Image (cartoon, rainbow, N blue to C red; front, side):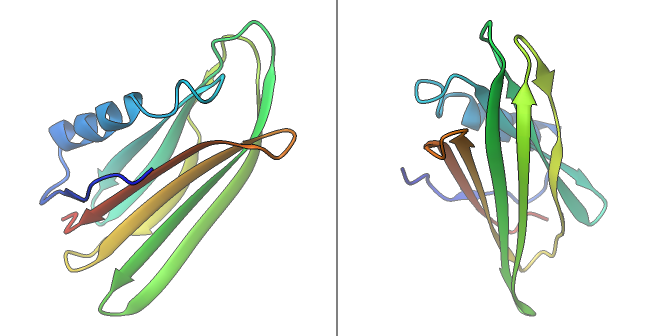
Length: 133
């Protein structure tokens, strides 16, 4: 599934709300989990969180991977974070999976993938953005 480019000049409360709402409609039918991205700006950094909720009556284990690709004047860099998580029934968590220094001239791609215990890809989300500052 390809998502459109998102151009954001400044990250503020409305931009963060838009990014959260943007992802609310993706992936829910494909997975027994509710997983969304939350992106916060603190000075020259972006913190990328996942909001994970297990609405079921049984525990659910999964592997989550966040890849941030930064392309800019200084070259290309990748940040990859992987975590194995088990959520209890009705449990909600918000782990931080990525931290990147931002630059006005850089282009960012944020990819989120989730696999179940058997290794089946159950969720994939991608966001592309230019000029985050």
